[in-house]
Length: 267
Image (cartoon, rainbow, N blue to C red; front, top):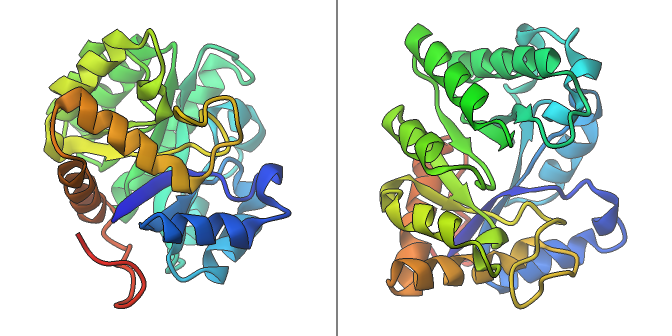
């Protein structure tokens, strides 16, 4: 069994075939999915998808691209929404200096607000960081000094220092289909170095489809290819990656439950 802890089932690419997308994931032994919130004000749609499928969960939060739009939403509201039984994570939130659709100041404030919600609820924060290693690490270290919180650096494409320092702080690092691409040797080296007990895999679907589907619409079933690439990179059996990343997921995402007996076999 594998888990896709970060996909976007509410995106329009899946609207016409959501049952098929979830069904193909199950057929590929991807037993649990987490569909990730990018706008709190659209949380009702995310929640409805999670309620529709037994083994689909969700998060609540604001993507850094949208941070400026939702800074008026208090931490208390994130915490309130996170009480829903299908909400197993906070976010995604963080820093994205590649596009800067929101101001750096707004992104930083949103990031800290979501860290506070993760700390209060005990739910893991899905962290988005792109071209912002130094500031991401500075905020993580500053906030960690105020009190530990669970988190994962999702779809990791940053540098070695941020990844390993995050692990030192107790965070996890998640790899997507990017590790299957050519000319990602530096990222692959990080994927070899991060301790196996701190690694997750994901799709970030509908984006970043792994080889052999690169350039197509990504979907949760394709996380099997990311896991296979990670196994090659670390020179271990694919079954070891499936076992470790699934155990890591359920350790970090404590509200999620293994699929019911007869659905998808436990690792």
